[in-house]
Image 1 (cartoon, rainbow, N blue to C red):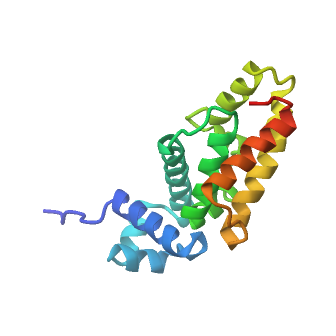
Image 2 (image 1 turned 90 degrees about the vertical axis):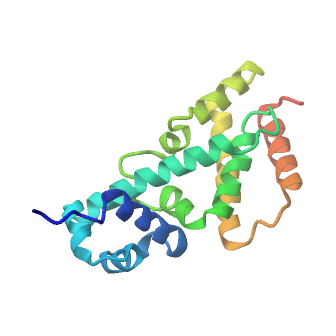
Length: 185
């Protein structure tokens, strides 16, 4: 009778995700992963042909994690791009290593940043539709202006250079929307 495998693909992927969250994507090596999972490297390569396959699964798990974070982030304002901005900046601050993997690395697979943000939630599309409903003539251009600001603030939060309170950030996002769009709320 063959011995039952005790290490599963889910266990390996969950351990890789935990390691990435704690130490960063670059630290997800076969040896460190084996130590984290409490096994040798053999089960990793029994379940995954190579580390590239594991990295693809890890990346997809990170994408789903961000989508869930965004979906669960409290909705506090109907002003277009404010919720997206607040959630994204908070994600960068709370999940630095996942943020780096998703939004600051070349390991995005074939997804653009827009595709990552829009994802299964349709987040960007919804925000653009809200701006259009408010009379913004070219909401895609407005998104780009807002995005440069939002992404910059999120990146600054990684280094500790963005130290505004939630209230200040909210006001800044709302004021930026009004300035860029011409819509006063």
